Length: 90
Image 1 (cartoon, rainbow, N blue to C red):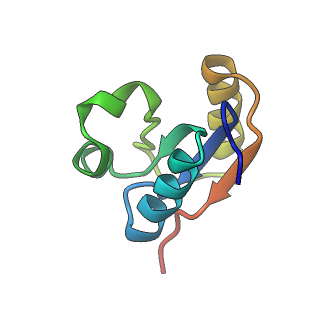
Image 2: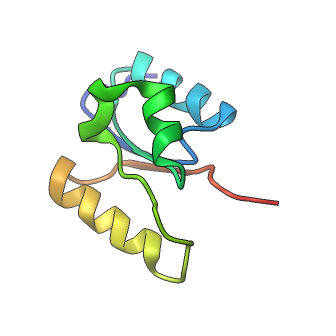
């Protein structure tokens, strides 16, 4: 999968599945926008060097919240080619 330079947003990026998806896209050359409700989890999973790519979600999800986050990511990183909405709670 050739993703060189493509911008990929991954919600739930600090979780097990999110980390696996992020690793696959990173290996393919994608630029990642990492999102998770747990800011400390993002830093633990990816380290401080990925802080510029992280977009932690500090408030509960509400209608339109991820649309705002996608627009903010587009402004910072360019148009999103892929959004992986992995975040969620049971």
